[in-house]
Every structure is written in structure tokens, then in C-alpha cells.
Image (tube, rainbow, N blue to C red; front, top):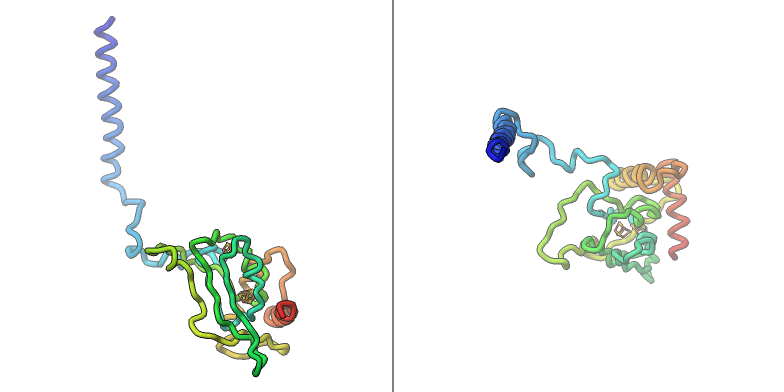
Length: 199
Ligand code: SF4
Ligand code: SF4
């Protein structure tokens, strides 16, 4: 009785080991499922991600009105903007636009109220760095005039693609349930209203 149970255990052990090894050896003949990251793929991973992917935040200063709506919307104060009116030109000047990506939780709340889609998530996800300080992204390198929404619609070829992208972003991501604004003209009106509210 003792001997038969002992022999059965030895047999089961051998069968189990051989089962496992059969699976292991079968993988020697297959094409690997895993791929080398990041350089052994024909297309960058970032380029395969959907438009609505919530990666690292970016700001298109060319279409930022300095309305501060994003700063106010962030629930954990990741965004710090300094914008003030130039007393002589009456132009709004952006002096600082920092986003602390170490704190950011990628919730997207800041991009929802943006009238032009200037602040938006990107497909970029590689944010590792050597210190927390370096994760604070300083988007304003030198003071720049804030974007002024044109009542007749934007015509500047340098700004138009950014505004188009921004409006697509608002329509597809930030306000998917909202009635789609009439492209740039809609942006113009909304931007004007919000800009006015921001003073
Ligand atoms: S994604 Fe969320 S946490 Fe990050 S800056 Fe925007 S509102 Fe703040
Ligand atoms: S325009 Fe957009 S990015 Fe610029 S301050 Fe207003 S909400 Fe923020």
C-alpha cells in the first residue's frame, strides 16, 4: 500500500514536470509575442494611440487666452498661471504657465473649460525623470502675449491648425455630450465670453 502510493507520487511528479517542459519547449518554435521596446517596432507606440488618450499635458501658447479657467478647474492645483494686462498696450501677457506633472492625475478636468483647446493631453506617456522638480513643466520661457480671439474667425495660417486641433479636442474629448460648436466661429464666441469673465 505504502509502496504503491510512493510510486504514484513519483509518476505524477515526472508527468507534471514533462507537461511543464513540453509547454516551455513549444515556445522555442513560436514567434515571440513580446517586442523590444522602444526601438524595434515600425511605428512609435505614441503614434498608435487614440486622439482621446490622456497622456502628458501640453499647452499651445499660441491659442491660450490667459483666461485661467484651467488653473481654476484643477482640483489639486497642478497648474500655476501668471497673466496680466500690459498697462500700455492693454494686451494680456502670459508670464508663467507651469504644470506639475508629478502631481497631475490625468483627470482631464483642466481641458474641459478651455475655450480654445490650448491645454490638452497628448499621446506622450514617457515622463520619467530624475527629480520631482524636473517634472514641473514650464511652458512659458519668456513673456508672451495671450491669444486674442477674433470676432470674424481666425485666418492666421500659423494659428489656424492649432485652433482646428483645439476645437476637435473640445468636441471629441472635453465635452463629448455638448452640442458641437460651429468650429472656429463657435470657439471665437465662447472664448470671448470666457475671456471677458476672466477679466
Ligand atoms: S489633468 Fe487633472 S490633475 Fe492634471 S492638471 Fe489637469 S485638472 Fe489637474
Ligand atoms: S485658454 Fe485654455 S490653457 Fe489658456 S488659460 Fe484659458 S483654459 Fe488655460
